[in-house]
Length: 215
Ligand code: DX5
Ligand code: ZN
Image (tube, rainbow, N blue to C red; front, side, top):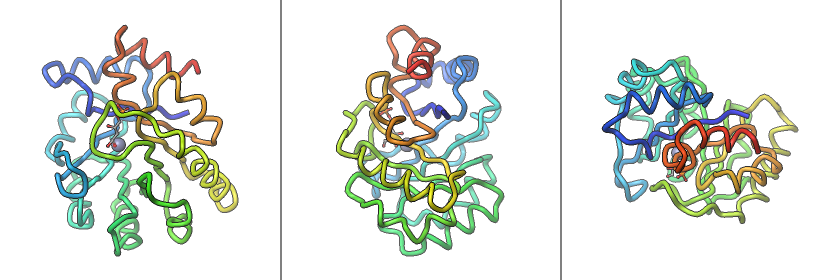
């Protein structure tokens, strides 16, 4: 199982130290939540942040774009060092063109579904992507409660993936912790994102990562 640690919950005063602790704890990817205050209510960070992550750690940079008009920003994120770039299917008429651009730039391409979006919304795009990301909270903030109502959708997408190309990574993001992870994995996810459960775990980053891994 791929664990992608979301930087949204780290303590930026000890940025480098926390990233290195996450890497040493055995997380697989670093998840970078990019929010524009339009597509989602919150605002976070842009491409300028990625080279600092790259200097602090060798972990692949897994960029989750929660922004309007993502097509205008793909090259900037690829040039800044992103290995994986995921875009939302909602409000995105050029979704296939943008997925193709992400791949042409040498990155893995992901498609993301909000809680209100059906599995069928990605049927036509599925053969073109490397990763599907199912949101199990409304995107915008870390620390929200996991929506178990999304589990049937994860199962449905697992079936859709297995029918065409089982190498596509099925990632789940939002409220994943040591309690909720079991149902996520049982539903067919091969990758999870966690912010709070890693960077705000009471006993520290290593213990938080172990608690996820040992479930
Ligand atoms: C939600 C983001 C998530 C989120 C994860 O908008 O895409 O990556 O911050 O945070 P936790 O793990 O705390 O739910
Ligand atoms: Zn995310």
